[in-house]
Length: 196
Image (cartoon, rainbow, N blue to C red; front, side, top):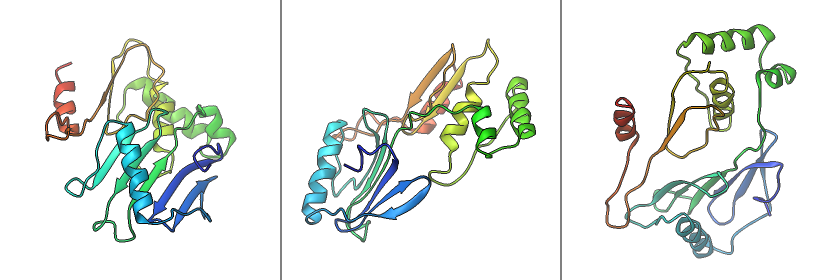
């Protein structure tokens, strides 16, 4: 139910008895619970299998993208001391523009014009911030302001960025399979992108 609620932007599970949600940029503890650690672990295994991945005691973390674009991260005990820990950041269907940022008071008109000009001139811009602070949304807005005639290469751990542009190449890392083969790291993708 929490995942189906459009007002919930993230579901955070800190073991079987503690589930939080993010709504409107604020965290709330819910009454939802799993029966026990085994039930939570079974849910984690089911989600991992749905994206053709495995989570085991030997490989206790999983960072993946669900088919709807949501990003999921798991951590198993004993590294996760509260029990299986999971965060599901839902894919936002809202497309922002600089006008939207100005309207909601996130940036001044001068600030928006400055960033727009920087994109036009091909300046380097570093976007940073904490989880859920809006980095990906801002990057989407910035990328949509790139002037025509460029090639945009997007490199991500898990694809989240939506770039509406004519010439876009998107790369995503890949975890090793059950036999430990086929891993593609950020470094591999960056190295390849320099030759494109």
